[in-house]
Amino acid sequence: IEKGVLAPEPLLRSAANGYYLTAVKYHRFCTSVQKTGSVVNTWWWSTITAFKLVPMLLAGLKSEADELYHANATAWRTGWVIRSHSFIGDFLVLLYGRYLGVIEPPFAAEIQINMRKTAPFPYTAILDNWDSPDTELVATMLQTLCDHQVEQAVLGDKKCYFEFNGGIYTYLPLAALLLMKLRALRGLANPQFSHPGFGDVSALFEQVSTAFSEYVGLHQITRIEDAADEELNKILARMYSQDFDAHAIFANK
Image 1: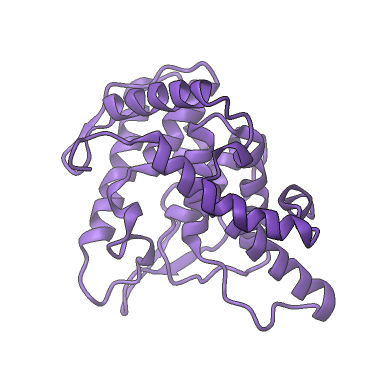
Image 2: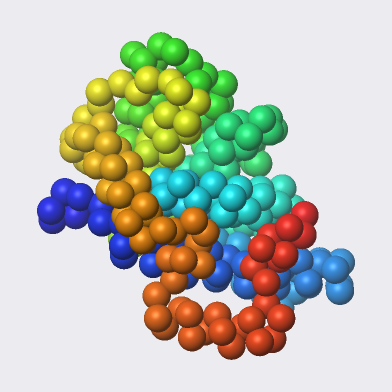
């Protein structure tokens, strides 16, 4: 943040840890449903889990990003998610679904945005037009996403926007970066876009894309396992000895 760059190495290490933590969580939820018919004796699914698929996709690890999408989509559709949150998490899952050709309605008609107020889903127009060739229209979409994130981050103690309560995601415009990345994957142009809260988002996107591409190529990272650090590899060795297989877990739909 201080240098104005997103460094790929720590982000990918974090993404690797997040990938396996999500696999464990998904296994726990699915096992509970299979054994009891409902979710019992487990924590609710946090909406920030949806944020984890963004750095995965930025790194070019699309298979793992697809796995995280399907796990998150299952969690949202089946009501595992704590609903007193903003719609940013919903938007990330629904937008990635649109990219994959999955069109579905918002996961909730309204959510509580503070202790006294609810709000309807605000991103239908963005989902319907995310792949528009009109870059001016796309700039308004990016403006909306960034404005909402800043608004949610600075609200007072009575807020219910728990995605942006001072944690790492507060300072990263991941919703905007995901929209730009999916458009780039479709071969669509992105506008030049800056925001008072995040600076030059277009330059950030280019920097992230270049840095991730170079880092992944240099270290020959073709799957998320290749991004694990020494400590995570020790944990995974123990988990593998107990028949843990994240890819098989995510295949459970």
